Structure formats: structure tokens, C-alpha cells
Length: 300
Image (spheres, rainbow, N blue to C red):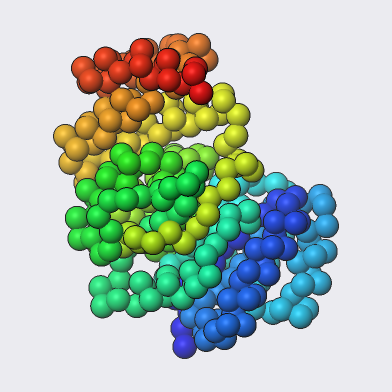
């Protein structure tokens, strides 16, 4: 039977995390060996300098359910995603961070969703973070895919950039490979919005992933602000070229600034020249909320 999904796991110098993640997938296969009839597993080691390569080599001798590649040099997270994309051949790809915790049965759930009569162009796996779910909107099969994507982003701007929560059709990512934003750190957000522009999607109601922010590749205030106000905004502004409604996109950006005006205030001190033109996206409501958001931020 042809495999339909590749679980792609990028890793770098985090041997304890990759051990735990591989053990999880091994346990899923032991519970249901039919998984490997439909699912391929690839681990990409980004030229780790710890014992990751040695562990994976030894582990595979007794657990041959996965393949692994070793990059000749550290390609960065997005470069490693690209290596995994090029190594996969299935219709769908799922990039799984080595440190995010997954709920039992998640692989079977993805296969179940894929096997619907009308295969979705994109699958969003709800996640759990800080005592709440990532998304609480209308779930299930959504034919209003572009509206659904904007809805998810407006509720939680980080959801569509969280790669472990997103399952893509491989060909959509290949279509984007020449896009200048393809290799940005926030590229998974670009992949998500582009995929949602291609047809119906599926948004899960139940959470399947526990987000672990402690080891995020985008940690650090300066990097986070750069992501939000350089990369996120540029990606949002490009959505019209993917067929998104101009008015809906403008509203989404405006809502983003309503909740992120305190962060934008801090960004002024980092890159004022780039920050100043962004005020064109502010609505009256966003302007009014600036003092309140700043006070709330510094009280935390």
C-alpha cells in the first residue's frame, strides 16, 4: 500500500529530546503496526556535535521504521525542513519538533482525516499551551479555507507558524520553494496560509500537541520582534497574491496590532525606521489600546 504521510523530524544537538520523540513513535507503531503501511518517518540531523548521530544509527538497527539523514553542515531549522521536504515523497508531510509532546493516537487521527472523501489541502492539529487550547473557533472540515486561516491567526497569531500543529500537502511547499520568504524562520506560517488558499482544510477540535516553548528557535526579544513586525507582516501583506480578500487581510493585520501594540512599541527602539510605516495598519481601536497594552505588559 502506498504511504500517504511522512513524519519529518528535524533535530540538532538535543539527544535527550530525540530519544523521547523516537520512543513515542515506536510506541505508536507497536500499538498499531498498520501505521507503517501508510506513514514514512524521516529524521534529519543538522550536523549535531553531540551523540545524536551515534544514537540514531544504533537505534535504527533495532527499529527500522525510520530513515535518517545527516546534513553535512548546520543548515538552520528552515534549511533542515527543506532537506526533509526534498527527502520525502508522500502526498502529505508533517514536520514535528523533537521537543513537542504528542498525544497518543495522533498519527492515526491524521490518517483518518486524510482518508476523508475530500482530502484536505491543510490540516491543523489543535494544541495545548499555558492551560488552554490554541484554537477555539469553528472546527472540522472547512470549505471556507482562507477565512478559516485568517480566523486561526486572529485568535492566536503563533498557531500557523507552529509547525508541529500543521500538516501540509508536499506539492504546495514545493510550489513555494522559489518564494523569497520560503527560508525565513517564520516560513511555516507562509506554508500554512498558502496551503489554505488551495482548497478545503481540516481544523481539529481536540488538541493533539503540547507546545513546549522553552526551546523555541525564535527565543530572544529582538528575534521575536523581528519575526512579528518584519516577517509576519510581510507574509500577511502577500496573502492577496494568493487569492485572499484584501479587506479581510487588512482587518487581520489591524487586529494583530490591536493585541501587539505593546510589542510594536518595543520594536520602535530596535528598528524605528522600519517600525514607523507599520502604523498605517492601525485602526482607531488599535491606537486607543496602545497605553492599556503597554501598562498590562509591564505589570506582568
